[in-house]
Amino acid sequence: MHLVHGVVFRDPALIPIWEKVLAGDRLGFDDGLTTLRTWDLPALGRMADHAARARNGSRVQFVVNRQINPTNLCVLSCVFCDFAAKPGDAHAYEQDMDEVLAQVSDELSEVHIVGGLHPKWRFDRYLGIVREIRQRFPRVQIKAWTAVEIDWFARIERTSIEDILVRLKEAGLDTLPGGGAEVFSDRVRKETFKTKIGRRRWFEVHRTAHRLGIMTNATLLYGHIETYGERVDHMLQLRAAQDARGPDDAGFASFIPLALQPGNTGLAERQASVLEDLRTVASARLMLDNFPHIKAYWVMLGENSAAMALNFGASDLDGTIGEEKIAHFAQAKSPVGLARERLVRMIRDAGKTPVERDALYNVVQVWEAA
Ligand code: V47
Image 1 (tube, rainbow, N blue to C red):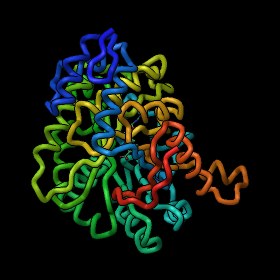
Image 2: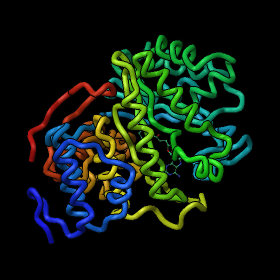
Image 3: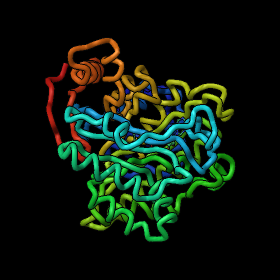
């Protein structure tokens, strides 16, 4: 056991990393591997929490939001996706405009819209969803369509990514979600998402968005066939892209490690363990020194892992998502209020200060810490 600047280490391999963190030196590929391999979770957590506090103090954010998925029909066949459907499938669905609008309310700060690459829908239909929501709910911010969809729109419209993003922005789009990145590895892509855009196009979409002043997020899908080296490499590519943005560009606001939900994908027997989740979140906080936030997406991590992740470097929980639907069924008087309270409690339980934010990371309300 070694006590080094306030942290007790059982795994001595972490000590040089702690020294780099304290000196403000960047971590490299091998450091990333060490953080993903270590069994010394308490020391790793202390290091990642130190990095999170250096950026965000004791604050952990969340947003009052709702996810809208207008269709699950999709021309792609990604091995890890249990959501997508083909025409004729029993679980295939598409929502019309009224059904989409019925899911929005003025109580929300953000709507998060993603869906499938519908074989028949034209770009105008997707654009119309953004425009209608903006017109009817001017105060609700819109986070919509991943890089995969933006690329698809450009192809079906035979135009550039820039043109698509400009038109979406004019219609009311505020920010882009980080999905579709999966793992920036040609090997993993070949085996699990062969027909989907690869890293070059994904980065092109995000770079173009940043140049147009549109902030975006980035994800990593882990817990399947990817190696630790591929996870670290994924983070290093994101760090380099964030470094390379121009002085007037928007950038990446948060990084979201997504734990694969094995379902019927056949890609993993069970979901990644809580240790794996915490190592991935902590590693991301330490490696991605130029990302404002690491998000613990509780919907996929589960509430227990997400709650623990708040002391392993995460400073954002994403949002209330569909929690208020559950509260509605329970006939709560204020379903949004209840969903909000639950996240506030989770953050306080972790000894952090709850901060409600909007989609553009402006502060809506700060609560007292526990
Ligand atoms: O790109 C697909 C992933 C992503 C599975 O930007 C799966 O704020 C787990 O991007 N198990 C979509 N994950 C979700 C997403 C997201 C979520 C929350 C916040 C934000 C944000 C973005 O979900 C896809 C894919 O990587 N995914 N199938 C699965 N079986």
